[in-house]
Image: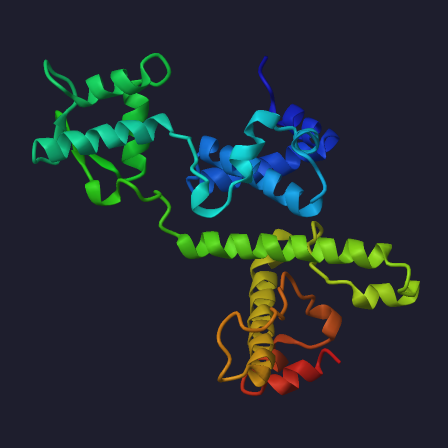
Length: 294
């Protein structure tokens, strides 16, 4: 059955879990994270987190709570070097064969097809019936691990074990931001359920992660709005860094103290009643900008 975009959207609205799965799928594709490897790690951390949350649980209890077969609980509960993932993507297996061939024959080239060992014969040996030679070649070329050169492929051994995504900083930033959001959610839930806090005080105690957006601004004003918001955010980042720098100890080692800080997602400039030119005049003195929020 063919699914239209409208049908897919209706399904996602009806199932919030589908929206979360869609987000995870985008992340996996964006950063070239392999599905089998991710699922294996997900199962492992489900078990590890369950053990921390429910230390009194037995193996069968952990199995029920996580939905993981109890025969694999011991495997996933191992930590550090004791845990060895037994997951191999077929394309990785093929890449290992290509590297082995190149080193054995002291070359970086392998014929696409022919009477002897070739790219085609290796693909058929490692993934016969599940992947085509063309699809494997297309993916390895996309990752920069092989290069098409007429009747052969050049194997890029230097990139063989690296992810196709070179944007490690972006991936680390993504991890950090997701952790910030989850920490905010957990904290807010604890505050809401804490009976010792007065109801009127809970709003001030909660952490805030806000996205301020509108669907009523004419398109012709979008560049101006984006420029102003960018300017506001730059000042906000500068002010937050200024505050952090004021209190940082020059003798403390990184990680010595508990983490403190903030995560800025969006700021409403109009709510402050300050125009763009005023913001620009504040660039040299963050303290003036900070006063605008009081």
